[in-house]
Length: 371
Ligand code: SF4
Image (cartoon, rainbow, N blue to C red; front, top):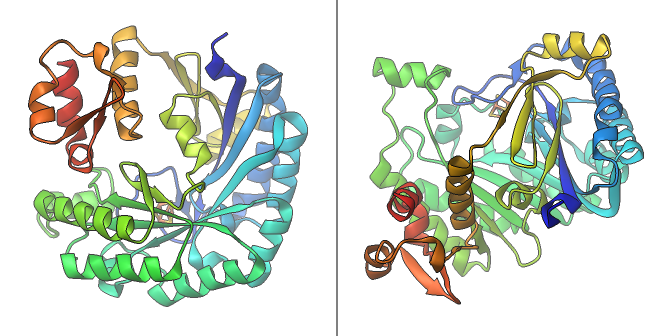
């Protein structure tokens, strides 16, 4: 057994949302709220069905994502975490995160979540510019993010992430810098900033394909990434993964587990799991997931074993993403030289580590190094 197998994370997927955002290709649905209590029951059952295979493995993080997990009732979320803790070996100090949409939480709900054991809150802010939120088809307004954030602080949340997205149609560099400054002014412990990507099978993807909406401009997105690096760095946030910044000690343990290729359990419709070089995933449609669980079956949709060459590529990519770098000996002589000369890579203690410019060109870097 490798050292990596000693600890694991648990991801729980909740596929319900208030509305469907135009850019989103997650397994998320608006208008399925009538399934919520059946779904919670199914998650409780799946935790029990899945746990025996993970006996003896310490769980150091639990992450409720979606979708919008905070569409569920606090009592259900409490029961869910209690079940996960009772059937898996969750450590007492495990990081427990719940994703929230600002419109689904108020002080009372947040206090209930904190009391239930969800110690880390990850909120989808996306932008503080109304027109950018409209371009993303987000239902909330900038004021609701500020209100929800202050409510979280008021009830005692110390560990709060804000998610941001840059590069939507009409967003300028100035607007993005304002969003960054407003985010910094709230002083969250963690900030994720993702460049908008257009997925073909989404409403936005279809609008872009028809030419109704322009695709994100890669040069502008590169400038926006650099602005994030500068402003967040100056404000004391450490850049520990391509799209993630944190105050020291607030790096997301759960997500680091994915990037460090630690095993994780996936519970819920479409959730993925990983263990021993093998990935598996649950069936995606919530109704199909419910039927399988209600028949007493594990709702497995498929699995794959990573070929050694793919596993190597993935490891290089992930290690570069989190600035862990790769041992210089992994790369053939001379391959890294052009990237060292152009400042995309640096040498650190026998490792090749990307600079922030290198992070921006990560795909190129990985291809060039592994070729
Ligand atoms: S709230 Fe999040 S998961 Fe739900 S539709 Fe919007 S982007 Fe997707």
